[in-house]
Length: 372
Image (cartoon, rainbow, N blue to C red; front, side, top):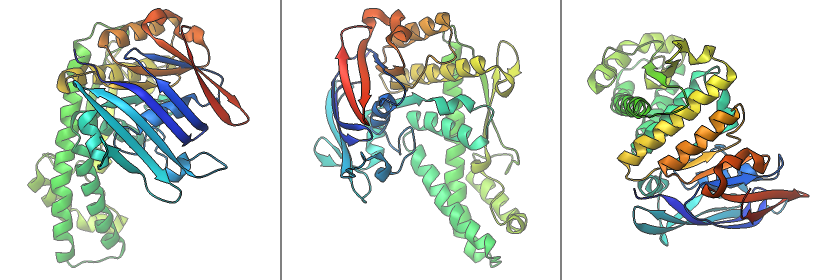
């Protein structure tokens, strides 16, 4: 199978890294070092080679190294579907993020056409027990990996909803003000629902095909207050929004629509909702979904995605840790994984490349190692 992989990554004045250069091969990368050394910053840099604000959802100004605050830059060489791409993304102080692909200015959505990047970070460990917003974001990232235009649908929907909410708060009753906005919400919202449902189907199929030590999750897209019987039908959704105006006006916001959706998961073998599982089971279920996403993308995109797995060994026993590494290698994915010590990656052996990150007075240093 064709591989998607970075062959070089350079950071300049990015977070704790004044300058870092990584020459890479397609194998998984084990990154180890003490807490606070700058390991996650490397993963964040890679995450910015995909559309959006990266794995920390940080503003451009927050990424620059302090105290210089000169702005930051990331350059990368990407091998993708038998082609080599040169990517540059940067932001000068006080300015938005810029992007060039193969020496041409490009919108961020163009990154989704040449690469697929998935991540799992410790903040997601509480995904199943906290609010629905995090689960929607998780599902939308998975959906975006299959359908890059999903981001446009989400942005269009949210823009129209903000305008509609402003009218509702101002108690505007003239229906003419709402018609166009509700039409836009309905069209984009129906597309969002279809895209999410398709993504869940692909994840479910990919889970069922796996022979894995990680649990299978039964996934469902639910709406606490359904907008209509056919949320993938723009006309039906528009009619529901119109009918619900008086109720929405009383609340001062839109109470129905895909912005209220939630991702439900059940630990299949036990029949237990993910929110009621142990911490280790919840982590294992998340890893299972990331691996399923990777397998589905390998078919859909033509190459497995780049995986960013921050502190992935946390809450995994030695057996599941070894199984995870076997899965990653079988998938053929270039995975960037972090941990505090090289012993956490011992099961990888020569199947991985190793990098140590150290810190001295807030300055990170990256050192390539031959092995763990």
